[in-house]
Length: 211
Ligand SMILES: [Zn+2]
Ligand SMILES: [Zn+2]
Image 1: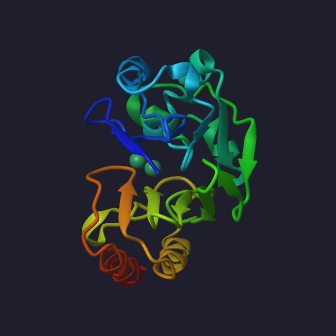
Image 2: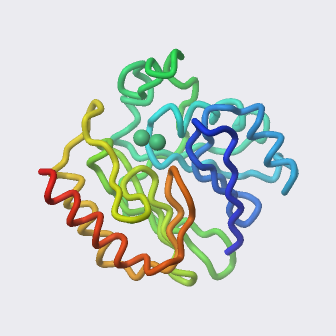
């Protein structure tokens, strides 16, 4: 699996370009993102935009990129209503209205997204930060795209936004500890390949302690 990390601005969530045709999250600065994508591929090659959750810093740029590329947009079904809401999408925090994007694909968890002849992304429903948050796991390279569920060094997503739940977050992180993860691609911060299972274990302890 080929992964390019794109960070359109310090405020934007990380965008990951996977195998030159799938975007995981878009940040909220589509103009910058478009220019960054063009350094790697023709944006028209993008087939699918997967949003890890509804929040504006991950989804604000999706409508623009989807329109320019013709890509489909996917989101977990439990975040669709929040995506349309100024508060639920936290767009109002950034001084914007809710993202102008409607997902054409909705997940419920357990889906397998084929990304090459041999590779697939498994959709793992990880509520807690938002009700419809997902993580994506690629089993060959043992990679985890963790959105805002877990971050490096035992950090965890906030649970004080609309639809958040610290109890659900702990259960979700518990699910992640059952995976073997070699590389963590978080929604914010740096990519890490340093003893990732232990880092996720630390996140679980952190989350359980904050309940
Ligand atoms: Zn975020
Ligand atoms: Zn978020």
